[in-house]
Image 1: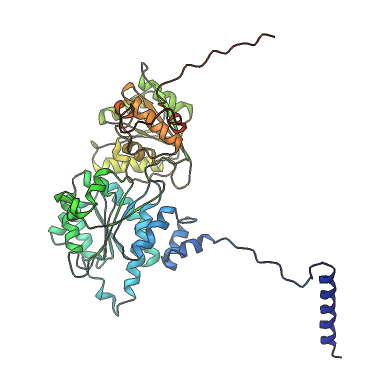
Image 2: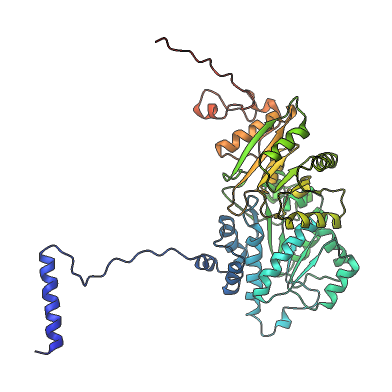
Amino acid sequence: MHPISAAAMILCLRGARALRAGVRPALQRAPRRRVALTATQDWEKLGIGDKLVEAVGAMGLSAPTDAQRDAIPGVLNGEDLLFAAETGSGKTLAYLLPTIARLKAEEFNVDKLDELRRPNRPRALVLVPTRELAAQVQAVAKELSHHAKLSVRGAFGGSDGVGKQRNTLKKGGAYDLLIATPGRFEKLWDLGDVHLSKCSVVVVDEVDTMLSQGFGAELEKVLKATTEREKPATVVTTTATLTKAVRRAFGDLSERDERWRFLPELRTVETRGLHKATDRCRLELVDVVGKDKLEELLVVLKRAPEKCLIFCNTVNSCRAAEHFLSERNACETFSYHGELNSREREASLKAFRDDDRDGALVCTDLAARGLDIPDVDHVVMFDFPRNPVDYLHRAGRTARAGKSGKVTALVAKADRVLASAIQRAVLNGEPVDALSADKKAYLKGGALHVPSKSAKGRARRDLSRARKPKPKTRRSR
């Protein structure tokens, strides 16, 4: 017998004996283990392409957020979207990544790039409400476009005047993506420095702010030029709060107010965390009734020196808080409000970002929306916000990108109703956007009344009413 055949026969006999004895043969393969997807594979599944997967890897992003998983496929497929996601959920990448991926895909469908790329004709436009946010989005877009080999321009106020930006757009040659504020874009458009004939994607970031700040006319002009044509552009809008005003503006066409008829019908995508405070952020209320509010602020900051934002409702309140903290040498302070010009705001924000020490940015709600300020450990509300939407935006400046954070709010007598309602909603993991500062809304017959007999009602008891502790009785021995 051939020696190899004999060896094979011996192995078979041993296997048969092992099976009769109830023992697994040594040659049987172990079952395969399921291998978890790597970070790269997780991004690849979204279909953004190898170059952009490489780009997010270079940015140190381990995996897409839920918000990015919800929005990216829709934008890639050319859907018109109203994308609503909580602050800190990565909305900027959620629209930039698929927009850049689409621009790259367009290049494979033409024989010559000159057919697509023409001077002063961006292929995608991103509109944002403020200069600071525009600069922030442009920086992210440039980082991504470096890997994708695309060109990015910016058109917004600040250090560059209109003349300088006109020269930049003219001399720079063809470019692909333009990041702009509505006012500056309209001015450049009217001067003939920008045309939208090649624009295939229009993004309106922070659309709730755009509508509330009176940019409706500029948006109407852009959207009519890009959607009312033979091949309409894809429209993507984002918001961190889906307010009643936004719902009415983007609702059914037959039920809309006349002034919002120009807005296209969009598919609404809402994330699960919308209008809820993140569970990684701890809220503490500090009662300041009958106390010196500035002294209480100093106590809060001294208790745990951290990099923080201090929100005020007015410029005068900002100045008072900053002056007091400077006099007491409490910490390094920086200011950010509407009475500073754009250069001063940019310089203050940069100094705060670059400062390695535990400093404080004393600001109004101008710093509450859109800005990404990394490593903010603590948000202090020196003045309690006037409505729950402003609370969400302020609190969203901390506990971002998976990190934990803390919110401390100084509560005056007039703030107690709204503050206790927000605290209650945060503890119960409920949305806060519909809450009211009107005490009557929580009474019987009010819109927010919850019967106290039910277990759910007891859990929602008004926390502003402190219960007296029951006296302890000693047992006689």
